[in-house]
Picture 1 (cartoon, rainbow, N blue to C red):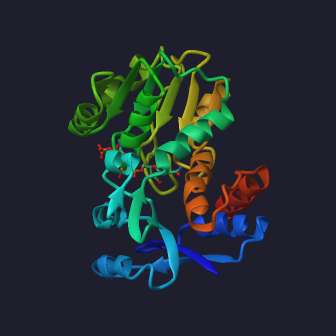
Picture 2: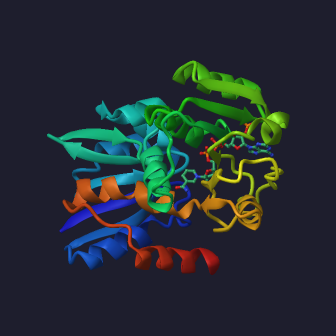
Length: 276
Ligand SMILES: NC(=O)c1ccc[n+]([C@@H]2O[C@H](COP(=O)([O-])OP(=O)(O)OC[C@H]3O[C@@H](n4cnc5c(N)ncnc54)[C@H](OP(=O)(O)O)[C@@H]3O)[C@@H](O)[C@H]2O)c1
């Protein structure tokens, strides 16, 4: 039986078992996917013995993403860009680390808005944390003309820009509403709007009527930002799509089937989020 898991500290909140459990059943695979609480001090030993414990690999959640990246024998470009890993597997006995978050975001965006033209577009990104770095890079790789980057702590945004290149233009956090007028896409990558976190104060009234508004926060599914955008008639993309799509590569590596993000899977997760 093939086995995979998600490691974190704590890890009880992780919805990954729901996603991978659905796919294991759907594809009739004799496999398992569970939660493994791993204290930070135990991580090196846990990863050294991952294969001996019978795991084909694992997902990695907080606070282990950076340490898992550092512990891997091989790293993929997206993991190097983020300096963090969320997916681990073995190749030729060597532990390989990738970060599938940004690809998950791009797949989710494409699935929700297939006609959105990114090449040559101006895009606005709110936030410069761990998730933002990969998303900014992925947008640049898709050929956007410029990324307008806004973060409360400007130095953090400058660091992202320095790592990605001149097409990233850093602006003051306070200028986000005014400067985003021409954006074809606005993405919130801050934790603001998440249940229990602060409120994202973003005036969407100046956005172009064709602007797509995406949020990577998925609890609640419709964040106040998305609700405001929808009320203005703008197209919106919620964070659940990213969560589902980022899980695809790991499942394929561990269980040998490229799984599909279906409406049924989305509804399953939606019920879980709404019941939380
Ligand atoms: N949908 C998915 O699959 C998915 C995947 C990954 C992450 N996420 C979600 O994305 C969010 C960000 O994750 P992350 O890993 O990037 O977090 P992170 O590295 O901790 O970054 C947090 C970001 O939020 C900003 N922020 C926090 N509090 C703020 C406030 N009061 N005012 C203004 N800005 C504030 C931070 O700004 P400063 O730099 O100024 O502190 C930073 O830009 C989380 O809610 C996470 O759950 C979703």
